[in-house]
Image 1: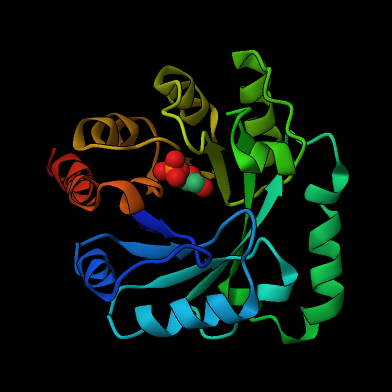
Image 2: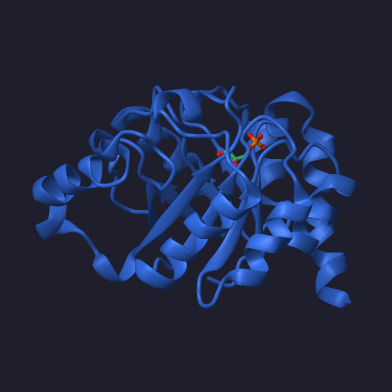
Length: 228
Ligand code: 1GP
């Protein structure tokens, strides 16, 4: 996946046509559709049909098997590596495959190994993530994903707060084949630059709803990086 910058839109949240136009025309590499709660088939279809008016690639992160909507360019299936509850590692995924496996466009599906590190985030609470981790624990989770499970993507998730970039860099240095996604608390261009220098791909979410202009500037971070 060659993308370096993605905006993440939550189908449960309201976004105006004007804001969506700016987001889709921003130069971001792809729009990621996903959320921890309240994602339904209907609100996902609605958001997809609006994004489809633009050329930007559109990717669905399938966090609820009920909202597996056809018509996206790619599908990402999250597996939470540092959960206490194996349902979030393999349970939901097993049920989704049982239900929809025969219909899945497998060549358009990639799995993501999430390491959820902000204890206050909805995703951490929902998935019962073990967030009190040493750097060596985090790196080991990433290596399990990369070397043992051979997942194509490791996602260091600090949703809602800007994370430890030194740790993110350490993780990337240990990855053998997986692509490193970073998301969480990117609210301006400077943070986006730091994250883009530490991970392969950065994901910008919440700030789209709080300060659209600042969010749009984050796209510059990967352009500048690419030119280096
Ligand atoms: C959330 O990693 C993404 O899944 C982005 O995080 O909403 O904090 O930008 P933010």
